Image 1 (tube, one colour):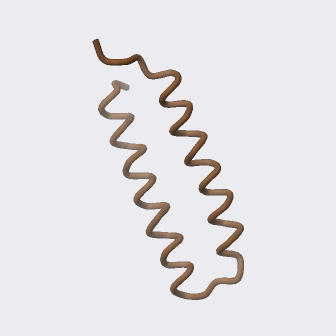
Image 2 (tube, one colour):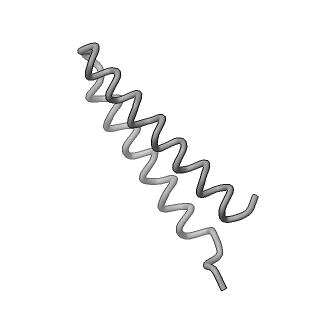
Length: 58
């Protein structure tokens, strides 16, 4: 998988995560806070790993 494709996948996952947190907040789900924290940690870790392991542009 190249740099552009993996970056696009992470952007799409970030958007899906944001929309899902917004939907949970809209429907006033009680466990929304836990979902938001766990998801934010997971997304942050994925972005950090992507930044470390993907080769920089030449």
